[in-house]
Amino acid sequence: MIYKNIAVDSKALSRRLFLLGTGTMAISAACSQNTVTSASPSIDNLRYLKSGFADGLISPSTIIEGMPQRTPFLLYGSDGIPIVNDVPRAIPVTLQFPSGKSLELELKEFSEGIPTPYFPMFFESNEVGLHKVAYVIDETPQSLSFLVSDKGDVDLVQVGETLRRTEIPTFDNPLNFSVICTRFDPCPYHYVTVEEALSNSLSTVLLISTPGFCQTSICGPSLEILIELVGESTNGLNVIHAEVYIDPEKIAEVNNFQSLLSPVIRDYGMSFEPSLIVANSENVVVARLDYMFDKLEIENALSLIN
Image (cartoon, rainbow, N blue to C red; front, side, top):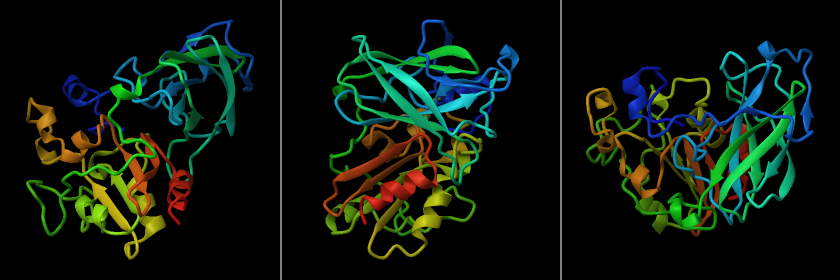
């Protein structure tokens, strides 16, 4: 979900296209009465939700109005570290729209095959502006906010749109990339180009990720899960893994970080990774997973093209 492994120093932070959204945890008695309880309500043990997506407060929002959206949240502890054990199976929340309308939702926990559980919220809003997620956890009312943008302000490919042309290197044609795959053992998904995928009659799975530079518990092993589910033989399916960097070894050297980003990042409007884009045989996108996703969500996305 970041363009570099997490190393907490000013140089590393300056090269990220955005920080993992901090959300805006606000403790307020006016929040929803949706409740998740804990054995101890002490402030030292307080848990809270944090945005795991570009929420518009720290970096430009990637959430748009008028279409189904998915926003993953993480559960943090008072020590500022994501909680990985003994998390609730679901967290009831109230989504409050700018107009004052509200929607009761339940954020279910997902964690199959990944180290850090997360809670995606699935919703659709027809309103642009500040949205608030209100909830009660550990007997404490809390809330966080995020911005929903006009669809014209976000360049991400959306469900229902067509796959976009872009240049992605292959083993046969590495273009100007110094490394085709940053996985310790290069994965088998670097033989088909997007141009070839668009011209044949097969469904397409496009994973944009940089496994060699994703070394945090939040950034799940998306490529490993995809290999487990799809296998190395991809007969009957276009499977493409696209790296984020043209020359990852120069990340710490350059001042113009943008110059190292691969064409797929620009052409697909990305400001984060990983992202999984699934398109049917007619090249129409049927699913897109961003930021973090587990084995179950990937399976569900792949099932839409079976």
